[in-house]
Length: 145
Image 1 (cartoon, rainbow, N blue to C red):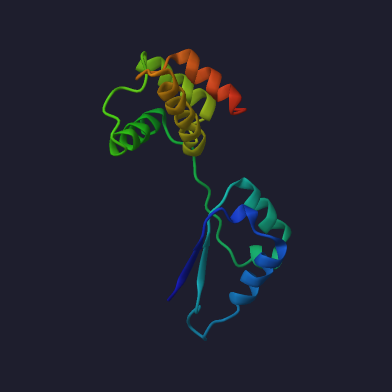
Image 2 (image 1 turned 90 degrees about the vertical axis):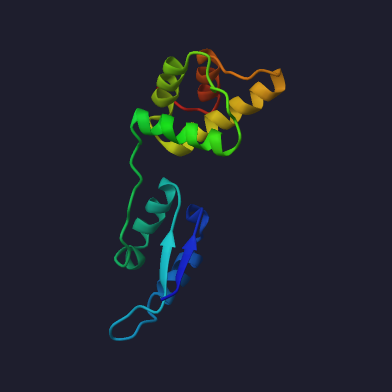
């Protein structure tokens, strides 16, 4: 059975969601002919809830926050895969605590902060970020404690 995966689905219009609703009607007596996986930010849930006919046909799954250790492991893994062999932070323990506090364990927010940190480090010709840089960038991303 074909599965259509749509990322950034929070940007879908009501007409597009209506089309998905219509396409979900194509089925046999035993099988759906097409399945959809919509992936998006919290706004997606709000849009779907307003469209009750579609919401009744969907099974929502929300991503939970990561634990501090999982967040650290994820960032370390991503840095390693990207070829960054050095420790990202001068005071690793405190910096990861700060990152976790501001990102609330949400991977997307933590990754955005780390991305900006890497740009800043490259611009400064440095290899490690300070706790203060983590906090400044997190605040610049409008992340709140």
